[in-house]
Image (cartoon, rainbow, N blue to C red; front, side, top):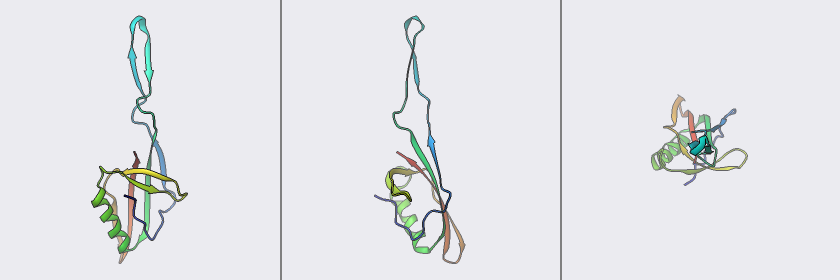
Length: 112
């Protein structure tokens, strides 16, 4: 399942940061040696997106998408540079009705 195609683009700046859950694993061996390795082979990215001036149809699409995938299911999201990422929601999207038929939204996504 892919992220819904909305009538507006995310506003700049949208943030991307590399998430490091753990630095690595070390194991002590005989004679005082310490062996180490990375816990994970891939560094994941976290995305924070903001949408402004979404119409009601966009808000309905976004809510329906979140209800279908929730925070446990991954989906494909494409950024402004046409790079595709497999991501999942980090939390519930924050939707705010700014004024009649105009919504704003904050979304956090985590690469899987």
